[in-house]
Length: 148
Image 1 (cartoon, rainbow, N blue to C red):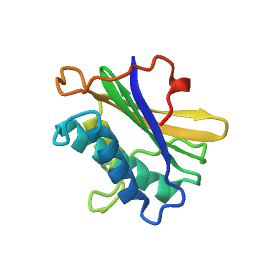
Image 2: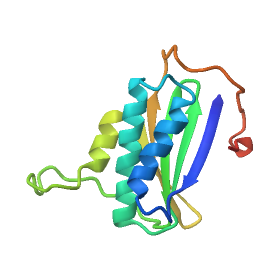
Image 3: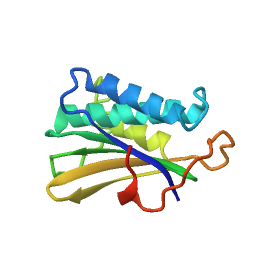
Image 4: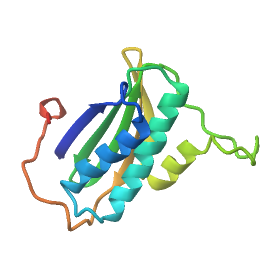
């Protein structure tokens, strides 16, 4: 069941990765205690997805956080309808970039990519089951009705 959903347009931010981190931290702190470890993982995932979008994709770029009772989905939508490329660990082990999606994979339960209407959404699902600190609130059953 969807608890909360929020999307932010990062396209015109001068520091989009910083904006993604702040947005993720502030949004999740409303629903969990601010020091919860899940928030750190979600911030890292949002940062990596945002960095990839601004390095490899086309605007506009949207970050979405979908908080469910058992999971959190962090999603980044851009206008480059092409699947992301995972870093090949055998290609260049001294490279200083190219490992973002591997970090996302390590921190998430599942991840994927969807293409719709000439846009790509790369998403990662983080497990929240067993978290006693989820604050109670109004549950939303239909994603189309989720607004902030």
